[in-house]
Image 1 (cartoon, one colour):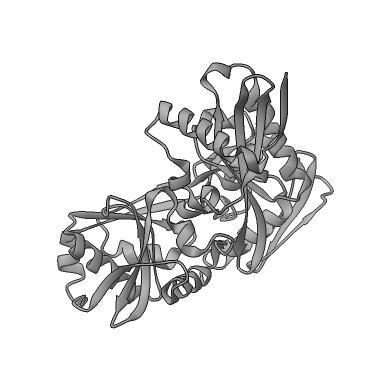
Image 2 (tube, helix red, strand yellow):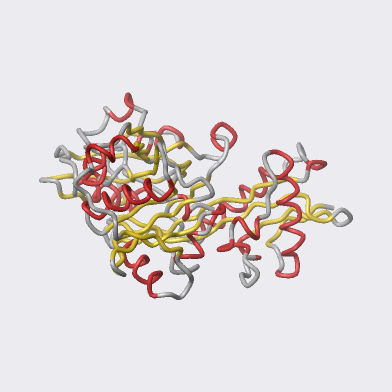
Length: 377
């Protein structure tokens, strides 16, 4: 008999064993305790995050976890749920466990007031569960030649990089810099360094005469960073130039949130290339608060046409109003345009769904959703 339930603390090792077995088999060797210390570290009790399919005789046959979090947008909190560690025992595939577990996770998020659910993975597989590609990530590539010419004025002799440790003053300063952004995912629940260590990354403080300029979060390949942030544009130049020199790189690539127009334009002055892509797979569960927060953020850096839009999907009707670049969004509508769940996700967050976005006043969509790699499950 199969039972679907939340995991018990005593089942930690069994959950990790199944996850490591399944993911190692289909991709590369996995050790989730090392890959995700914020979820599976030795002192972390994450049992309640997991739904299990348990066979009375054969044990755990599948599991799905949801990592709760908070996305802060101009001081407004959005409650998030990040799906991860989705796996089914190789001998139990085709028995419907993933569908059941995904539904249980979705029901729990709907009940606890989650605003946005997110995940990574194969796009077409998770479209069945209501997730669509959304958000905007810009990937900048800076070459050593750009540094030599465009940043020749930038002095980096006294710029150094030091790996951050939990509890150190540098961690507190880096966390404060991270939280100074217009949009950021909270890392307070885990600690900045622990979150940054996800997926074999390490956080490095960029220092100049002992003063924090910013930080770089990078993995085994220093040519590809998961996150780069500085307190000023000039210090960003120093960090990029210093990092390329330290590691003798030909090219250095790093992501920039699609909403961070000042950073995008500054780096584009000397970057070799800049590529736009979708950021994450997203399923909006509560439309009005999500649209209100993210469209308000967009109004801070882009002109929005005045207008009123009444929309409905998933039994939720809501009205969005923009006047003089001031945004309002509230539940309820008199004569809403009705969309399927999929079309609503794509209208609001898909950067390449141009035909649908033309239904809204100019500049409204896509919404500027972004999640950094350290904040993923």
